[in-house]
Length: 257
Image (cartoon, rainbow, N blue to C red):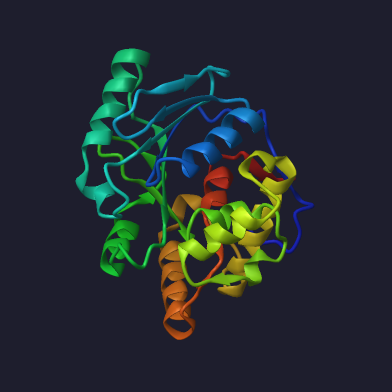
């Protein structure tokens, strides 16, 4: 998709058949709330969530489209490489309860850019490893999509058309800004989702990225990480940017008219 200065040529295709999708997240609350709202309330898909040490919850709406959201044992970026527990749970869930496998399944890994608890080297290794959303075996590599500095950058990008100009020192600052706003996850709708894409496009253009292909995203992902690191080094701030929209573009939910 080519970066655009407008959202007029984009739309949400609610008829798109995405099949089975797995989303791995680090958090225990906000990520689940956001993804459940988008995929069930807005898109009408079936939804399964697997939280740490909690009973699975199901929302069945659309047999053609099922989104499974799970988290690892910890919020450390290294856990997505070391923790096989969630992979085993997903494999058993799909095989035993739904007679499905992880083969030909879109997989996304959503993570915050946490300077305090995660080393740069672990992010770099993860970006190298998790570079393709479609995996054809049980190893489940998936595509890593980082929010700078955190998930709230995506939430804010749904309501502030100039978020691409904002920066935040810490995740706490971004979370505080969102919680102090008059908006909530429940206010996200089709129109705001497209505004979030608009913000992401502008950030991409600022980084000298004119177009991108989610199926070959490794180079761009690593470039964004490097530029965000350089910005933080000189300004002690992260440019507000979430790559969650890449998932919706890659799945064909957001498309060009």
